[in-house]
Image (spheres, rainbow, N blue to C red):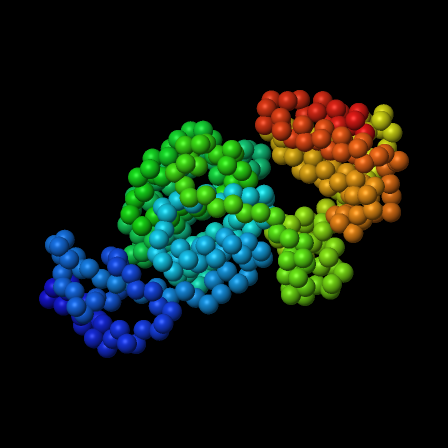
Length: 373
């Protein structure tokens, strides 16, 4: 019995009239298909020209907070079956890039459980250093080569193979070059999604071979409303939304992780104390802010700059009677600086942030900010 005859037996009890209006029929090669009754064998020997039935599950992106335009675009891509082989999701950390990517891949592959449990999905994260027990600074060439070997194999489920790299900007130059070949010549039905904070954070050769989708910070009103739907009181939702600064991932973590919430409150309190201290005290405090290991200093400094920027922004808003927009409401003030003075201090922070990727002395950079206060 030929493959064609076996297929006809499989679909004997199902006609095209049985299909619901939201089914999307598309020509493809797949194990799960219906042969069109008016079409015979494809020109390719031993294969069938067939139609794959794809039904969008209701509310594929229902739980996503914000990013309506991105979600609508991805829904259209799924419905019309017009896929790029690779996507680059760009946006701030904790804004929802990975969450949207996972929702998209689950819909694409028809997964109802978790992506991690599916044999044809691969996550690429930084590995843990066995000696120190801490995360390594980047994704290595070896990891990319192992990934390419897995992608070269046949899909276990007979459908798509998917790759998600949540920190694509942390690939080493060698790892990025190793991935380039896969992006240029994707193997079969392979979907690759990279996430990064900015286009400039990944090599231009990588970015140019991906379809770019930008994620913006979520509006405070949208985030507040979403948090209330998750059981928070109006006052709690407003407070968490303000502290999260348009980042749903951070807001949800504040709700779910009491330890993280306490850590955040301690960090804000320490920042307020830092800005209230004298110049001599600030210089001394800087010594304790930075870790001893060089590999960790940049990340800690980034987090410190983010927090300082939030607190100083609050002070600036208070000088123009816009307290309701502050992220960390406080009755305390750091002195009688004018709006222009606060803006100059924030510009100093911006200058330090822009040169952070260079080999700058972290301690001197923070002291430079302390002197500007």
